[in-house]
Length: 104
Image (cartoon, rainbow, N blue to C red; front, side, top):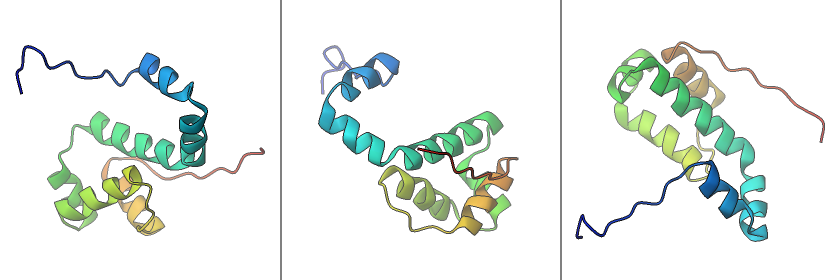
């Protein structure tokens, strides 16, 4: 790939707004909004700590691959992880899990 012609797509608010203008995309996004919100929370907490995957894994008592699988499962829309693992992740990045149900 020629680096001079490569133009990455910015994944910012304007890009998201453009995508969500498509009714099919919006419907799919809304169906998975809770998973995306949880993934955002996890990744933002990890970034805020400055910890590496290895450091988080050590704090969780698991492997780097297990942490990657947890994050990837959310990104792929799969829920093959336990609440216990989410709690361990949260604790590893100095946070706790709180779940709230809200009216529709």
